[in-house]
Image (cartoon, rainbow, N blue to C red; front, side, top):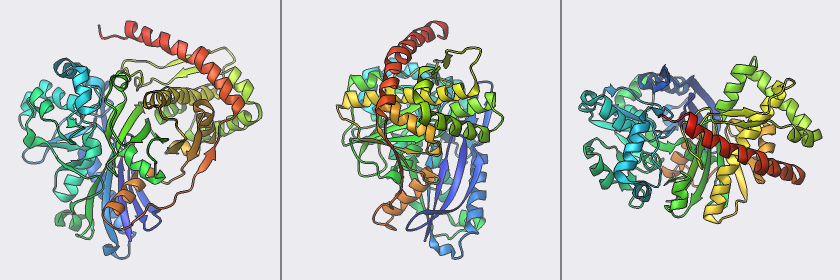
Length: 502
């Protein structure tokens, strides 16, 4: 028996074939996420994404001897971006990328009309240019003639599900990232719809994450070469889907999902809609299973910082891996010397995330000398990512009054022992590294298999454990308190002056 999990990521799209019951990765089809840039503006090229996914499905269909053994296709995607369609189901451009800041003024407008506290009480999130409503309003304001043709919209994974099944929907985890869902009722907010004069007929149906939306359309099944009885499902928010691979527990475990961005996910039995969480821009949401709520914060750059460093200072990714391994060996032998000479790196290459969210924030590398080399800079980049993550973890533990027992890591960071040990030492937390092939796509497949009755329990996943060193923890804590946080505070004040729109 087989399932296919699809991961529509910011950088890459992965179409993956897994075999049950262990969800072993049989094969995958990967391609760079088609994205078009115009100066700082960016948009996803959805028809190219759809065509790439079709090629991937066709490729994987040839890996199965008996087509009836493929039971489900489940789709997870990056949150916030939405696809608009007209009456002929043609895409209304642009499909603005989630990280594109062009809708900043719409985000401010939402705050002014609804009020920050009222907005957070309804949706559980703080208005930001990342969110779907701001993209929708931007198109409404800038291209009213295009907006007038709008008949339906949905999230990225919902768009692919629509193309595969003809049913137009979104799952609850992605809906809770739009700024349009009433978190308490778990329905589209009538207040938000009335505030912005939106047409409810254009809204997608809300469906359960991973549950069967429909079987694949006969036309598409015939075109791709698939069995027409395959179930199509929306697995939802990519980081949430990926967490399924770790069997994340409620309250005292964090998921650290790494990729282009880096997310920190905490599961709770209730939302936290008070002013402290609002002040620090921590997002509430709906989880993909067990009727749980999520607390989620995302750093706009994680893997992106490493890509930036590789592109500008190294010859290849292979050199990055080699250099990381060399530093790891040095760190095991003499960590004190490395920490003593640590440069300060604040990874705001695409602005900052919570708890001090600011899309205008800029990155900072401090402490350069004439003998600074690539090794020192890479160590600073990895440490800086961990310090940034600590600020978010500290906010979670302080405001929920709940100690964190362990942090479960998925994604590219699991292949970098130095990064993992730095997470343990800087965050003072047990790190469980799940070296899971294609965690998001795999989680999407597992979620669908559970919800659709093909398995009755999660598969067992192995992990590597990293524990904090008492000496390193103390040294990093001193650095964090005396250097990182004071300079971060100064930089936040400087950002407001130098980089304000005024």
